[in-house]
Image (tube, rainbow, N blue to C red; front, side, top):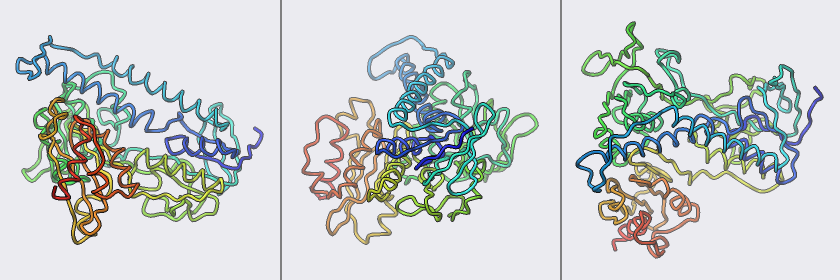
Length: 460
């Protein structure tokens, strides 16, 4: 094939990659993007979007089942429902197809050339793509962006295959497992474990840590643990996984001794690792921080003209972080002055109830500042939460004691993910407690708890 030359080459069409390419194309930069699978990457095709669709379906099913119970507090009665998981998965796939088409249309509108195939680096300005037709396409670029994303971590004692699956395979299952063990009680494991418990599976969560969701403080994760118990989810914490026994059971070791857990499916959700081993990245000899590519505040690597964004650059592995990094790179290549400032990246756990946090944890804030002002409002005092039958949880705001600058905001409760924009905006704009306390918040909404938390931090 004829060699392609361009100003910007983006390797990987996930959220970071396609946003970078589209923004560059809109600014008149000759841009090519290479994708080995489907545009949209993990997030759109087998991650964020499919999992949230399944979580919503599970929530709706659990809600209808609750209406069938004689003790439903809302007074609604319904016959015992059933679920066709194959139809649910088909609905999820339709959403993915629609969004895939939207991304492809956006790239086309920005005049970005899309090349499907697996890219391998030859040097810092050249890749060779093994295309779908079996040929090879050479692409040379003045600037290159590594945006190859991440993939699930595989445990040596639990290799993927058979009944042992990653989140990718789990989200495509068309039959509900009667018994499911989830190895990993981080956000992916707890989100999917909760969803399948609501769908009717008997779920057990296993983790080496002493509590679920260790990336959040205990106050935030406690309402989630309570809800898991109400759903009948079993916890095996401080547990070491030994492997799968000959009869297909998961062998674990806890302080109480050895135990075997029967399971029709074993989900391994212990984290993700950079997906760089198939693209000959070693040819570039980039500086790394552990397994991650080291970058500066403009997402530049140690090699001139080579940038990296998204999961390959480390935690937090979040689509919206990658998107903003993609925008920064496109603007830098276009000659604009941009830097990536990660101080206000929302982290959301779509559990039941949901968790959202922006800024440092409470413990980190206390380490950095001698004195803080903290305001917390429980949803038991929020009218909208009560009408949603979701009084579990709270909103918390953390600010400096000397000048009242807001450092962090967190919440746990029904539908609090939608508060993330307000949290992020407050930190990004450098809000102080007085700014939030003096802003009229609509009543009755969950958001007014933000204003009340700021007022409490001011001792009003």
